[in-house]
Image (cartoon, rainbow over all chains, first blue to last red; front, side, top):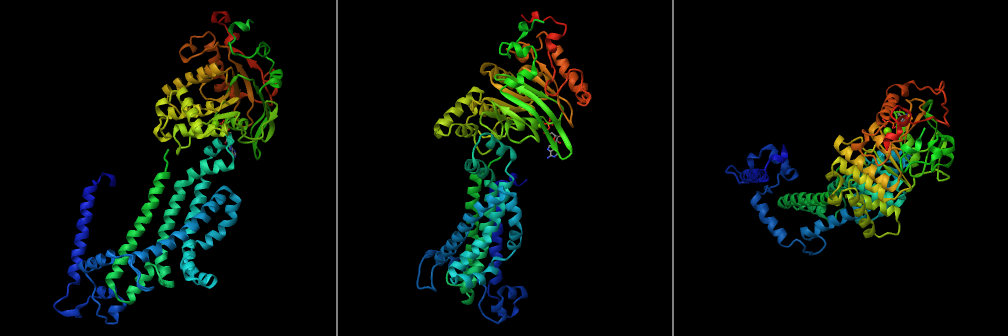
Length: 282
Length: 312
Ligand SMILES: Nc1ncnc2c1ncn2[C@@H]1O[C@H](COP(=O)(O)OP(=O)(O)OP(=O)(O)O)[C@@H](O)[C@H]1O
Ligand SMILES: [Mg+2]
Protein backbone atom coordinates (compact mmCIF):
# COMPACT_ATOMS: atom_id res chain seq x y z
CA UNK A 1 0.00 0.00 0.00
CA UNK A 2 2.43 2.63 1.24
CA UNK A 3 4.95 1.85 -1.45
CA UNK A 4 2.42 2.65 -4.15
CA UNK A 5 2.22 6.30 -3.11
CA UNK A 6 4.51 8.33 -5.38
CA UNK A 7 7.15 10.20 -3.45
CA UNK A 8 6.26 13.62 -4.86
CA UNK A 9 2.63 13.30 -3.82
CA UNK A 10 3.55 12.45 -0.25
CA UNK A 11 6.09 15.28 -0.22
CA UNK A 12 3.58 17.74 -1.65
CA UNK A 13 1.03 16.78 0.99
CA UNK A 14 3.65 17.11 3.73
CA UNK A 15 4.54 20.60 2.57
CA UNK A 16 0.87 21.52 2.32
CA UNK A 17 0.17 20.36 5.86
CA UNK A 18 3.25 22.17 7.15
CA UNK A 19 2.22 25.39 5.43
CA UNK A 20 -1.32 25.09 6.78
CA UNK A 21 -0.06 24.48 10.31
CA UNK A 22 2.36 27.41 10.12
CA UNK A 23 -0.28 29.76 8.75
CA UNK A 24 -2.79 28.71 11.41
CA UNK A 25 -0.13 29.21 14.06
CA UNK A 26 0.84 32.61 12.73
CA UNK A 27 -2.82 33.69 12.65
CA UNK A 28 -3.44 32.35 16.14
CA UNK A 29 -0.62 34.32 17.73
CA UNK A 30 -1.35 37.59 15.90
CA UNK A 31 -2.08 40.35 18.39
CA UNK A 32 -5.86 40.61 18.79
CA UNK A 33 -7.99 43.72 18.94
CA UNK A 34 -9.33 42.87 22.40
CA UNK A 35 -5.85 42.60 23.87
CA UNK A 36 -4.65 39.68 26.01
CA UNK A 37 -7.88 39.30 27.96
CA UNK A 38 -9.39 36.63 25.76
CA UNK A 39 -6.82 33.92 26.27
CA UNK A 40 -8.34 30.54 25.73
CA UNK A 41 -7.54 27.90 28.33
CA UNK A 42 -5.44 25.78 25.98
CA UNK A 43 -3.34 28.73 25.10
CA UNK A 44 -2.83 29.36 28.78
CA UNK A 45 -1.91 25.76 29.37
CA UNK A 46 0.65 25.89 26.56
CA UNK A 47 2.22 28.94 28.05
CA UNK A 48 2.30 27.21 31.38
CA UNK A 49 3.83 29.00 34.27
CA UNK A 50 4.42 32.26 32.49
CA UNK A 51 0.78 32.64 31.58
CA UNK A 52 -0.42 31.40 34.92
CA UNK A 53 1.68 34.02 36.63
CA UNK A 54 0.18 36.58 34.35
CA UNK A 55 3.44 36.99 32.42
CA UNK A 56 3.30 38.96 29.27
CA UNK A 57 5.59 36.93 27.06
CA UNK A 58 3.61 36.36 23.88
CA UNK A 59 3.77 33.05 22.04
CA UNK A 60 5.98 33.77 19.02
CA UNK A 61 4.70 32.98 15.55
CA UNK A 62 6.59 30.98 12.92
CA UNK A 63 7.96 34.14 11.36
CA UNK A 64 9.54 35.28 14.60
CA UNK A 65 10.89 31.82 15.27
CA UNK A 66 12.26 31.60 11.73
CA UNK A 67 14.07 34.86 12.19
CA UNK A 68 15.52 33.70 15.52
CA UNK A 69 16.53 30.38 13.98
CA UNK A 70 18.49 32.17 11.27
CA UNK A 71 20.11 34.30 13.91
CA UNK A 72 21.12 31.27 15.98
CA UNK A 73 22.32 29.28 13.00
CA UNK A 74 24.31 32.19 11.58
CA UNK A 75 26.81 31.70 14.41
CA UNK A 76 26.09 28.38 16.09
CA UNK A 77 29.51 27.78 17.57
CA UNK A 78 30.34 30.95 19.45
CA UNK A 79 31.55 30.75 23.03
CA UNK A 80 31.17 33.87 25.15
CA UNK A 81 31.75 32.63 28.64
CA UNK A 82 30.36 29.52 30.26
CA UNK A 83 26.78 30.67 30.23
CA UNK A 84 26.62 32.02 26.72
CA UNK A 85 27.49 29.52 24.03
CA UNK A 86 26.04 28.89 20.57
CA UNK A 87 23.36 26.30 19.99
CA UNK A 88 25.78 24.24 17.92
CA UNK A 89 28.18 24.07 20.85
CA UNK A 90 25.36 22.95 23.14
CA UNK A 91 24.28 20.23 20.73
CA UNK A 92 27.90 19.15 20.37
CA UNK A 93 28.16 18.77 24.14
CA UNK A 94 25.04 16.65 24.20
CA UNK A 95 26.24 14.55 21.27
CA UNK A 96 29.57 14.04 22.96
CA UNK A 97 27.90 12.75 26.12
CA UNK A 98 25.55 10.53 24.16
CA UNK A 99 28.47 9.26 22.09
CA UNK A 100 30.54 8.48 25.16
CA UNK A 101 27.72 6.83 27.13
CA UNK A 102 26.39 4.95 24.14
CA UNK A 103 29.86 3.88 23.02
CA UNK A 104 30.75 2.56 26.46
CA UNK A 105 27.40 0.79 26.63
CA UNK A 106 28.07 -0.86 23.27
CA UNK A 107 31.52 -1.94 24.43
CA UNK A 108 29.97 -3.61 27.46
CA UNK A 109 26.62 -4.79 26.08
CA UNK A 110 27.72 -6.43 22.84
CA UNK A 111 30.41 -8.73 24.27
CA UNK A 112 28.31 -9.47 27.35
CA UNK A 113 25.24 -10.06 25.20
CA UNK A 114 27.34 -12.46 23.13
CA UNK A 115 28.24 -14.46 26.22
CA UNK A 116 24.67 -14.44 27.49
CA UNK A 117 23.35 -15.49 24.10
CA UNK A 118 25.85 -18.34 23.82
CA UNK A 119 25.42 -19.64 27.35
CA UNK A 120 21.96 -20.63 28.54
CA UNK A 121 23.39 -20.86 32.07
CA UNK A 122 24.65 -17.27 32.05
CA UNK A 123 21.38 -16.20 30.50
CA UNK A 124 19.34 -17.78 33.26
CA UNK A 125 21.69 -16.48 35.95
CA UNK A 126 21.76 -12.86 34.76
CA UNK A 127 18.16 -12.63 33.65
CA UNK A 128 16.69 -11.65 37.07
CA UNK A 129 19.12 -8.74 37.41
CA UNK A 130 18.42 -7.52 33.91
CA UNK A 131 14.69 -7.80 34.37
CA UNK A 132 14.79 -5.74 37.57
CA UNK A 133 17.23 -3.09 36.40
CA UNK A 134 15.89 -2.60 32.89
CA UNK A 135 12.58 -0.90 33.79
CA UNK A 136 14.28 1.59 36.12
CA UNK A 137 14.14 5.10 34.69
CA UNK A 138 17.71 6.10 33.94
CA UNK A 139 17.18 9.39 35.74
CA UNK A 140 16.61 7.47 38.95
CA UNK A 141 20.30 6.61 38.80
CA UNK A 142 21.29 10.27 38.68
CA UNK A 143 21.47 11.00 42.41
CA UNK A 144 23.42 7.82 43.01
CA UNK A 145 25.75 8.69 40.15
CA UNK A 146 26.27 12.23 41.44
CA UNK A 147 26.92 10.90 44.91
CA UNK A 148 29.43 8.25 43.88
CA UNK A 149 31.08 9.90 40.88
CA UNK A 150 30.92 13.47 42.22
CA UNK A 151 31.17 14.88 38.71
CA UNK A 152 28.10 16.09 36.90
CA UNK A 153 29.52 15.59 33.38
CA UNK A 154 30.55 12.02 34.08
CA UNK A 155 27.27 11.39 35.86
CA UNK A 156 25.25 12.29 32.81
CA UNK A 157 27.46 10.03 30.70
CA UNK A 158 26.79 7.28 33.22
CA UNK A 159 23.05 7.84 32.94
CA UNK A 160 23.29 7.57 29.17
CA UNK A 161 25.33 4.42 29.58
CA UNK A 162 22.74 2.88 31.87
CA UNK A 163 19.80 3.66 29.63
CA UNK A 164 21.42 2.47 26.41
CA UNK A 165 22.96 -0.69 27.76
CA UNK A 166 19.74 -2.69 28.17
CA UNK A 167 18.30 -2.71 24.66
CA UNK A 168 21.72 -3.54 23.21
CA UNK A 169 22.34 -6.24 25.78
CA UNK A 170 18.98 -7.91 25.32
CA UNK A 171 19.01 -7.66 21.55
CA UNK A 172 22.54 -8.97 21.26
CA UNK A 173 21.75 -11.88 23.55
CA UNK A 174 18.56 -12.63 21.65
CA UNK A 175 20.24 -12.31 18.24
CA UNK A 176 23.12 -14.55 19.26
CA UNK A 177 20.85 -17.14 20.87
CA UNK A 178 18.67 -17.37 17.80
CA UNK A 179 21.44 -17.89 15.24
CA UNK A 180 20.30 -20.82 13.11
CA UNK A 181 21.44 -24.16 14.32
CA UNK A 182 22.36 -25.18 10.78
CA UNK A 183 24.86 -22.34 10.39
CA UNK A 184 26.50 -23.30 13.64
CA UNK A 185 26.58 -26.88 12.43
CA UNK A 186 28.25 -25.75 9.21
CA UNK A 187 30.88 -23.95 11.28
CA UNK A 188 31.34 -27.02 13.44
CA UNK A 189 31.78 -29.38 10.50
CA UNK A 190 34.32 -26.92 9.09
CA UNK A 191 36.16 -26.99 12.44
CA UNK A 192 36.00 -23.22 12.35
CA UNK A 193 37.02 -22.62 15.96
CA UNK A 194 35.39 -20.37 18.53
CA UNK A 195 36.82 -17.05 17.38
CA UNK A 196 36.15 -17.65 13.72
CA UNK A 197 32.64 -18.91 14.43
CA UNK A 198 31.92 -15.88 16.59
CA UNK A 199 33.23 -13.31 14.11
CA UNK A 200 32.34 -14.87 10.76
CA UNK A 201 29.10 -16.66 11.58
CA UNK A 202 27.41 -15.51 14.79
CA UNK A 203 28.23 -11.82 14.55
CA UNK A 204 26.99 -11.33 10.98
CA UNK A 205 23.98 -13.54 11.64
CA UNK A 206 23.02 -11.53 14.72
CA UNK A 207 24.10 -8.13 13.35
CA UNK A 208 20.64 -7.00 12.21
CA UNK A 209 19.17 -7.78 15.64
CA UNK A 210 22.10 -6.09 17.37
CA UNK A 211 21.64 -3.01 15.19
CA UNK A 212 17.96 -2.89 16.07
CA UNK A 213 19.00 -2.80 19.73
CA UNK A 214 21.52 -0.04 19.00
CA UNK A 215 18.87 2.00 17.24
CA UNK A 216 16.51 1.69 20.17
CA UNK A 217 19.37 2.59 22.51
CA UNK A 218 20.45 5.71 20.67
CA UNK A 219 16.83 6.86 20.54
CA UNK A 220 16.44 6.44 24.29
CA UNK A 221 19.84 8.00 24.95
CA UNK A 222 18.89 11.09 22.98
CA UNK A 223 15.61 11.32 24.91
CA UNK A 224 17.38 10.97 28.22
CA UNK A 225 20.27 13.36 27.61
CA UNK A 226 17.89 16.33 27.45
CA UNK A 227 16.37 15.47 30.81
CA UNK A 228 19.76 14.65 32.34
CA UNK A 229 21.25 17.96 31.24
CA UNK A 230 18.24 19.81 32.61
CA UNK A 231 19.02 18.20 35.95
CA UNK A 232 22.78 18.66 36.11
CA UNK A 233 23.03 21.91 34.15
CA UNK A 234 26.21 23.46 32.83
CA UNK A 235 26.19 22.67 29.12
CA UNK A 236 24.24 20.75 26.53
CA UNK A 237 21.01 21.25 24.66
CA UNK A 238 18.93 20.11 27.64
CA UNK A 239 20.52 22.73 29.84
CA UNK A 240 20.07 25.28 27.08
CA UNK A 241 16.34 24.57 26.86
CA UNK A 242 15.97 24.99 30.59
CA UNK A 243 18.02 28.14 30.50
CA UNK A 244 15.83 29.63 27.77
CA UNK A 245 12.77 28.72 29.79
CA UNK A 246 14.19 30.63 32.72
CA UNK A 247 14.81 33.52 30.33
CA UNK A 248 11.29 33.04 28.98
CA UNK A 249 12.70 32.84 25.44
CA UNK A 250 9.84 30.82 24.02
CA UNK A 251 11.19 31.05 20.47
CA UNK A 252 14.47 29.48 21.56
CA UNK A 253 12.59 26.66 23.23
CA UNK A 254 10.67 25.94 20.05
CA UNK A 255 13.91 26.01 18.10
CA UNK A 256 15.51 23.66 20.61
CA UNK A 257 12.62 21.24 20.19
CA UNK A 258 13.10 21.38 16.44
CA UNK A 259 16.87 20.86 16.73
CA UNK A 260 16.50 17.96 19.17
CA UNK A 261 14.09 16.33 16.74
CA UNK A 262 16.39 16.85 13.75
CA UNK A 263 19.48 15.57 15.56
CA UNK A 264 17.54 12.56 16.88
CA UNK A 265 16.40 11.80 13.37
CA UNK A 266 19.96 12.10 12.08
CA UNK A 267 21.26 9.72 14.74
CA UNK A 268 18.58 7.20 13.90
CA UNK A 269 19.27 7.50 10.19
CA UNK A 270 22.98 7.05 10.77
CA UNK A 271 22.41 3.74 12.53
CA UNK A 272 19.79 2.92 9.91
CA UNK A 273 22.53 3.15 7.29
CA UNK A 274 24.72 0.78 9.29
CA UNK A 275 21.75 -1.55 9.76
CA UNK A 276 21.18 -1.52 6.03
CA UNK A 277 24.83 -2.37 5.41
CA UNK A 278 24.73 -5.44 7.67
CA UNK A 279 21.24 -6.59 6.73
CA UNK A 280 20.81 -9.88 4.94
CA UNK A 281 17.81 -11.68 3.62
CA UNK A 282 17.29 -15.27 2.68
CA UNK B 1 26.37 -66.80 -10.17
CA UNK B 2 28.59 -64.77 -12.44
CA UNK B 3 28.93 -61.67 -10.36
CA UNK B 4 31.82 -60.09 -12.23
CA UNK B 5 29.89 -59.66 -15.44
CA UNK B 6 27.54 -57.17 -13.88
CA UNK B 7 29.86 -55.74 -11.29
CA UNK B 8 30.34 -51.98 -11.46
CA UNK B 9 33.81 -50.87 -12.53
CA UNK B 10 34.45 -48.96 -9.30
CA UNK B 11 32.80 -51.46 -7.04
CA UNK B 12 34.07 -53.15 -3.97
CA UNK B 13 36.37 -56.14 -4.24
CA UNK B 14 35.31 -59.63 -5.10
CA UNK B 15 35.34 -60.82 -1.54
CA UNK B 16 32.90 -58.15 -0.52
CA UNK B 17 30.77 -58.97 -3.54
CA UNK B 18 30.61 -62.49 -2.23
CA UNK B 19 28.80 -61.09 0.75
CA UNK B 20 30.68 -61.13 4.00
CA UNK B 21 29.37 -58.09 5.83
CA UNK B 22 31.07 -58.82 9.12
CA UNK B 23 34.44 -59.23 7.48
CA UNK B 24 33.82 -56.10 5.46
CA UNK B 25 32.98 -54.05 8.52
CA UNK B 26 36.39 -54.79 10.01
CA UNK B 27 38.28 -53.34 7.07
CA UNK B 28 35.88 -50.55 6.24
CA UNK B 29 36.84 -46.86 6.18
CA UNK B 30 33.83 -46.14 8.35
CA UNK B 31 32.62 -48.70 10.80
CA UNK B 32 29.37 -48.09 12.63
CA UNK B 33 29.40 -50.31 15.68
CA UNK B 34 26.18 -50.95 17.51
CA UNK B 35 24.95 -47.39 17.75
CA UNK B 36 21.62 -46.52 19.38
CA UNK B 37 19.72 -43.34 20.07
CA UNK B 38 17.26 -43.15 22.92
CA UNK B 39 15.20 -40.28 24.29
CA UNK B 40 14.23 -41.35 27.76
CA UNK B 41 12.42 -44.64 27.42
CA UNK B 42 11.91 -44.21 23.66
CA UNK B 43 14.39 -46.00 21.47
CA UNK B 44 14.58 -44.38 18.06
CA UNK B 45 17.01 -47.00 16.70
CA UNK B 46 19.44 -49.47 18.21
CA UNK B 47 22.00 -52.12 17.40
CA UNK B 48 22.88 -50.47 14.10
CA UNK B 49 25.99 -51.91 12.50
CA UNK B 50 27.34 -51.18 9.05
CA UNK B 51 30.50 -50.25 7.26
CA UNK B 52 31.42 -47.95 4.41
CA UNK B 53 34.43 -48.69 2.28
CA UNK B 54 36.75 -46.21 0.69
CA UNK B 55 35.31 -45.05 -2.63
CA UNK B 56 31.94 -46.52 -1.85
CA UNK B 57 28.61 -44.68 -2.17
CA UNK B 58 26.08 -45.83 0.42
CA UNK B 59 22.48 -44.69 0.55
CA UNK B 60 20.24 -44.96 3.58
CA UNK B 61 16.54 -45.36 2.87
CA UNK B 62 13.75 -45.53 5.39
CA UNK B 63 10.52 -43.97 6.50
CA UNK B 64 10.27 -40.54 8.05
CA UNK B 65 11.22 -40.41 11.71
CA UNK B 66 13.16 -43.68 11.83
CA UNK B 67 16.36 -41.83 12.69
CA UNK B 68 18.21 -41.34 9.42
CA UNK B 69 19.21 -37.75 10.09
CA UNK B 70 20.33 -38.75 13.56
CA UNK B 71 22.62 -41.42 12.09
CA UNK B 72 24.05 -38.93 9.60
CA UNK B 73 24.64 -36.38 12.36
CA UNK B 74 26.43 -39.04 14.37
CA UNK B 75 28.63 -39.84 11.37
CA UNK B 76 29.30 -36.11 11.00
CA UNK B 77 30.23 -35.89 14.66
CA UNK B 78 27.54 -33.27 15.30
CA UNK B 79 25.90 -35.46 17.93
CA UNK B 80 26.92 -38.55 19.79
CA UNK B 81 25.11 -41.88 19.93
CA UNK B 82 23.46 -42.96 23.16
CA UNK B 83 25.26 -46.28 22.78
CA UNK B 84 27.91 -47.67 20.51
CA UNK B 85 30.57 -45.92 18.51
CA UNK B 86 31.59 -44.99 15.01
CA UNK B 87 35.15 -45.70 13.94
CA UNK B 88 36.59 -43.74 11.02
CA UNK B 89 40.02 -44.65 9.72
CA UNK B 90 40.74 -46.54 12.90
CA UNK B 91 39.76 -43.77 15.31
CA UNK B 92 36.50 -43.19 17.09
CA UNK B 93 34.52 -40.11 16.08
CA UNK B 94 34.53 -37.56 18.88
CA UNK B 95 33.41 -34.49 16.97
CA UNK B 96 33.01 -32.93 13.53
CA UNK B 97 35.91 -33.10 11.12
CA UNK B 98 36.87 -31.42 7.89
CA UNK B 99 37.46 -34.91 6.53
CA UNK B 100 33.73 -35.51 6.52
CA UNK B 101 31.94 -32.78 4.58
CA UNK B 102 28.22 -32.43 5.08
CA UNK B 103 25.69 -31.32 2.49
CA UNK B 104 22.77 -30.20 4.57
CA UNK B 105 19.16 -30.70 3.63
CA UNK B 106 18.36 -26.99 3.80
CA UNK B 107 21.51 -25.94 1.87
CA UNK B 108 22.68 -24.05 5.03
CA UNK B 109 24.41 -21.26 3.15
CA UNK B 110 25.26 -18.10 5.05
CA UNK B 111 22.92 -15.49 3.54
CA UNK B 112 25.28 -12.58 4.24
CA UNK B 113 28.03 -14.11 2.09
CA UNK B 114 28.06 -14.41 -1.68
CA UNK B 115 28.28 -17.83 -3.31
CA UNK B 116 32.03 -17.33 -3.60
CA UNK B 117 32.16 -16.10 0.00
CA UNK B 118 30.43 -19.21 1.29
CA UNK B 119 32.83 -21.55 -0.46
CA UNK B 120 35.82 -19.36 0.39
CA UNK B 121 34.86 -19.42 4.06
CA UNK B 122 34.93 -23.21 4.01
CA UNK B 123 38.26 -23.16 2.20
CA UNK B 124 39.73 -20.71 4.70
CA UNK B 125 38.86 -23.23 7.41
CA UNK B 126 40.40 -26.08 5.43
CA UNK B 127 43.61 -24.28 4.47
CA UNK B 128 44.53 -22.08 7.41
CA UNK B 129 47.59 -20.70 5.66
CA UNK B 130 45.83 -19.56 2.52
CA UNK B 131 45.33 -15.89 1.84
CA UNK B 132 41.89 -14.51 1.24
CA UNK B 133 42.62 -14.14 -2.46
CA UNK B 134 43.75 -17.76 -2.69
CA UNK B 135 40.58 -18.97 -1.00
CA UNK B 136 38.40 -16.89 -3.29
CA UNK B 137 40.17 -18.03 -6.41
CA UNK B 138 39.78 -21.67 -5.41
CA UNK B 139 36.15 -21.02 -4.47
CA UNK B 140 35.43 -19.58 -7.92
CA UNK B 141 37.00 -22.66 -9.50
CA UNK B 142 34.85 -24.94 -7.35
CA UNK B 143 31.70 -23.03 -8.30
CA UNK B 144 32.59 -23.17 -11.99
CA UNK B 145 32.89 -26.95 -11.73
CA UNK B 146 29.24 -27.18 -10.67
CA UNK B 147 28.13 -24.80 -13.41
CA UNK B 148 27.77 -21.64 -11.35
CA UNK B 149 30.37 -19.55 -13.14
CA UNK B 150 27.75 -16.91 -13.88
CA UNK B 151 26.55 -16.51 -10.29
CA UNK B 152 29.79 -16.19 -8.35
CA UNK B 153 29.01 -12.90 -6.65
CA UNK B 154 25.36 -13.45 -5.92
CA UNK B 155 24.02 -13.91 -2.46
CA UNK B 156 21.90 -16.96 -1.62
CA UNK B 157 18.73 -14.85 -1.69
CA UNK B 158 19.43 -14.17 -5.37
CA UNK B 159 19.89 -17.85 -6.24
CA UNK B 160 17.26 -20.44 -7.10
CA UNK B 161 16.82 -23.49 -4.89
CA UNK B 162 18.83 -25.65 -7.27
CA UNK B 163 21.64 -23.10 -7.47
CA UNK B 164 21.81 -22.86 -3.69
CA UNK B 165 22.08 -26.61 -3.41
CA UNK B 166 24.85 -26.49 -6.03
CA UNK B 167 26.76 -23.99 -3.93
CA UNK B 168 26.38 -26.41 -1.01
CA UNK B 169 27.76 -29.21 -3.18
CA UNK B 170 30.62 -27.02 -4.39
CA UNK B 171 31.42 -26.06 -0.81
CA UNK B 172 31.60 -29.71 0.23
CA UNK B 173 33.60 -30.81 -2.82
CA UNK B 174 36.05 -27.92 -2.49
CA UNK B 175 37.08 -29.27 0.90
CA UNK B 176 38.30 -32.43 -0.83
CA UNK B 177 36.91 -34.41 2.08
CA UNK B 178 37.62 -38.06 2.63
CA UNK B 179 33.89 -38.56 2.81
CA UNK B 180 30.70 -36.75 1.91
CA UNK B 181 27.61 -36.92 4.08
CA UNK B 182 24.39 -35.84 2.40
CA UNK B 183 21.01 -35.49 4.07
CA UNK B 184 18.33 -35.59 1.37
CA UNK B 185 20.29 -33.04 -0.63
CA UNK B 186 17.80 -32.81 -3.47
CA UNK B 187 14.47 -33.38 -1.78
CA UNK B 188 13.50 -29.71 -1.70
CA UNK B 189 14.03 -29.28 -5.45
CA UNK B 190 11.65 -29.57 -8.37
CA UNK B 191 11.89 -32.73 -10.47
CA UNK B 192 13.86 -31.20 -13.36
CA UNK B 193 16.47 -29.55 -11.20
CA UNK B 194 16.72 -32.62 -9.05
CA UNK B 195 17.32 -34.80 -12.09
CA UNK B 196 20.12 -32.71 -13.49
CA UNK B 197 21.80 -32.42 -10.10
CA UNK B 198 21.56 -36.17 -9.60
CA UNK B 199 23.28 -36.75 -12.92
CA UNK B 200 25.92 -34.24 -11.99
CA UNK B 201 26.61 -35.79 -8.61
CA UNK B 202 26.62 -39.20 -10.26
CA UNK B 203 29.27 -37.97 -12.69
CA UNK B 204 31.32 -36.28 -9.98
CA UNK B 205 31.37 -39.30 -7.66
CA UNK B 206 32.16 -41.67 -10.50
CA UNK B 207 35.04 -39.48 -11.64
CA UNK B 208 36.50 -38.86 -8.20
CA UNK B 209 35.52 -42.12 -6.50
CA UNK B 210 34.29 -40.04 -3.61
CA UNK B 211 33.29 -41.97 -0.51
CA UNK B 212 29.76 -40.92 0.29
CA UNK B 213 26.85 -41.56 2.60
CA UNK B 214 23.50 -40.19 1.55
CA UNK B 215 19.98 -40.19 2.92
CA UNK B 216 17.21 -40.19 0.38
CA UNK B 217 13.52 -40.87 0.01
CA UNK B 218 13.83 -41.26 -3.72
CA UNK B 219 14.34 -44.89 -4.76
CA UNK B 220 15.57 -44.01 -8.25
CA UNK B 221 18.06 -41.60 -6.78
CA UNK B 222 19.41 -44.34 -4.55
CA UNK B 223 19.69 -46.74 -7.47
CA UNK B 224 21.38 -44.12 -9.63
CA UNK B 225 24.01 -43.17 -7.07
CA UNK B 226 24.51 -45.96 -4.56
CA UNK B 227 26.77 -48.98 -4.55
CA UNK B 228 24.82 -50.27 -1.60
CA UNK B 229 21.44 -49.25 -0.23
CA UNK B 230 20.79 -49.68 3.48
CA UNK B 231 17.14 -50.27 4.20
CA UNK B 232 16.00 -49.14 7.60
CA UNK B 233 12.92 -50.51 9.31
CA UNK B 234 10.30 -48.25 10.84
CA UNK B 235 10.84 -46.78 14.26
CA UNK B 236 10.67 -46.86 17.16
CA UNK B 237 13.43 -49.37 17.67
CA UNK B 238 14.49 -49.14 14.03
CA UNK B 239 17.29 -51.35 12.64
CA UNK B 240 19.09 -51.85 9.39
CA UNK B 241 16.84 -54.57 8.02
CA UNK B 242 18.51 -55.29 4.68
CA UNK B 243 21.45 -54.25 2.58
CA UNK B 244 20.75 -54.08 -1.14
CA UNK B 245 23.82 -54.32 -3.34
CA UNK B 246 23.45 -52.30 -6.51
CA UNK B 247 25.04 -54.35 -9.25
CA UNK B 248 23.97 -52.11 -12.13
CA UNK B 249 27.06 -51.05 -14.08
CA UNK B 250 28.45 -47.54 -14.07
CA UNK B 251 28.38 -45.00 -15.54
CA UNK B 252 24.70 -44.69 -14.78
CA UNK B 253 22.56 -41.79 -15.86
CA UNK B 254 18.90 -41.18 -15.41
CA UNK B 255 18.49 -41.68 -19.15
CA UNK B 256 20.06 -45.15 -19.29
CA UNK B 257 19.17 -46.37 -15.82
CA UNK B 258 15.75 -47.80 -16.53
CA UNK B 259 16.98 -49.65 -19.62
CA UNK B 260 19.45 -51.61 -17.58
CA UNK B 261 18.65 -55.26 -17.01
CA UNK B 262 17.84 -55.84 -13.39
CA UNK B 263 16.79 -52.25 -12.78
CA UNK B 264 13.13 -53.09 -12.32
CA UNK B 265 13.84 -55.99 -10.00
CA UNK B 266 16.06 -53.74 -7.91
CA UNK B 267 13.52 -50.95 -7.80
CA UNK B 268 10.63 -53.29 -6.97
CA UNK B 269 12.65 -54.84 -4.18
CA UNK B 270 13.33 -51.51 -2.50
CA UNK B 271 9.77 -50.28 -3.02
CA UNK B 272 8.34 -53.50 -1.60
CA UNK B 273 10.49 -53.01 1.44
CA UNK B 274 9.28 -49.47 1.97
CA UNK B 275 5.66 -50.38 1.42
CA UNK B 276 5.35 -53.53 3.48
CA UNK B 277 8.50 -55.16 4.88
CA UNK B 278 9.79 -52.03 6.71
CA UNK B 279 6.75 -52.00 8.97
CA UNK B 280 6.62 -55.78 9.36
CA UNK B 281 10.27 -56.07 10.39
CA UNK B 282 10.54 -57.16 14.01
CA UNK B 283 13.99 -57.42 15.56
CA UNK B 284 12.63 -59.71 18.28
CA UNK B 285 11.54 -62.20 15.62
CA UNK B 286 13.82 -61.36 12.70
CA UNK B 287 13.65 -63.00 9.30
CA UNK B 288 15.86 -66.05 8.82
CA UNK B 289 19.51 -65.16 8.42
CA UNK B 290 19.23 -61.70 9.96
CA UNK B 291 21.57 -60.63 12.71
CA UNK B 292 22.29 -57.06 13.73
CA UNK B 293 26.02 -57.43 13.01
CA UNK B 294 25.51 -59.40 9.80
CA UNK B 295 22.60 -57.90 7.98
CA UNK B 296 21.90 -59.99 4.89
CA UNK B 297 22.98 -58.54 1.58
CA UNK B 298 20.71 -59.03 -1.39
CA UNK B 299 21.35 -58.47 -5.08
CA UNK B 300 17.92 -58.22 -6.62
CA UNK B 301 19.30 -57.07 -9.97
CA UNK B 302 21.21 -60.29 -10.62
CA UNK B 303 19.36 -62.78 -8.45
CA UNK B 304 16.17 -62.27 -10.38
CA UNK B 305 15.20 -63.57 -13.85
CA UNK B 306 17.09 -61.40 -16.40
CA UNK B 307 20.49 -63.00 -17.06
CA UNK B 308 23.38 -60.82 -15.88
CA UNK B 309 25.29 -61.42 -19.13
CA UNK B 310 22.76 -59.24 -20.92
CA UNK B 311 24.46 -56.30 -19.25
CA UNK B 312 27.30 -56.70 -21.71
N1 LIG C 1 14.77 -34.14 21.32
C1 LIG C 1 14.03 -35.19 20.97
N2 LIG C 1 13.24 -35.83 21.87
C2 LIG C 1 12.51 -36.89 21.51
N3 LIG C 1 12.48 -37.40 20.28
C3 LIG C 1 13.25 -36.82 19.34
C4 LIG C 1 14.06 -35.69 19.64
N4 LIG C 1 14.71 -35.33 18.50
C5 LIG C 1 14.31 -36.20 17.55
N5 LIG C 1 13.43 -37.10 18.06
C6 LIG C 1 12.82 -38.21 17.32
O1 LIG C 1 13.84 -38.96 16.74
C7 LIG C 1 13.37 -39.58 15.57
C8 LIG C 1 14.42 -39.54 14.51
O2 LIG C 1 14.56 -38.25 13.98
P1 LIG C 1 15.36 -38.03 12.62
O3 LIG C 1 15.37 -36.58 12.33
O4 LIG C 1 16.68 -38.70 12.70
O5 LIG C 1 14.41 -38.78 11.59
P2 LIG C 1 14.60 -38.99 10.03
O6 LIG C 1 14.66 -40.46 9.79
O7 LIG C 1 15.72 -38.19 9.52
O8 LIG C 1 13.23 -38.46 9.48
P3 LIG C 1 12.94 -37.68 8.12
O9 LIG C 1 12.97 -38.70 7.03
O10 LIG C 1 11.56 -37.15 8.32
O11 LIG C 1 13.96 -36.61 7.97
C9 LIG C 1 12.07 -38.88 15.20
O12 LIG C 1 11.02 -39.81 15.38
C10 LIG C 1 11.97 -37.75 16.18
O13 LIG C 1 10.64 -37.61 16.57
MG1 LIG D 1 15.85 -36.41 8.29
